[in-house]
Length: 188
Image (cartoon, rainbow, N blue to C red; front, side, top):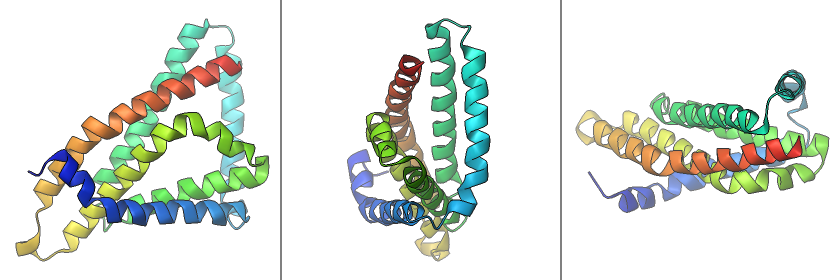
């Protein structure tokens, strides 16, 4: 098992690859090419958000914060975990995840204005690296599956990826969820 630093360094090209997909899809989304894809689901999400906001108005801010923090953290942790675990499906899921998340951000920026990027910055400084790292691990695992059996080191790669998930990705997501939850509660 290689050191965590060596493993992270070995992911640099995978991180570059998923970053290009992510940021490229932001541009595609901003240009309006994904409007048909996101308009209906986002309306449903907005409606759900309004319902949650109305139902949490009666609770003290501390309870609301804990609810939002728990939901945000678990959702992001589960998504990043799926990016890693489903990566062996030839890297399709994490690549698709990077594309759809970037496209959604671009589409929201086109619909709501560039202020969307400012709203993402505080928690995105932690969440985005965690997301890109987990998608890179998933793509690397997908590539590992494609190797010839005698060249494949899937168990070692999976173990290294899960160690990074537990020691790097989850702490980053924890911090991001704290920041996002504080901002949500403060905005109420």
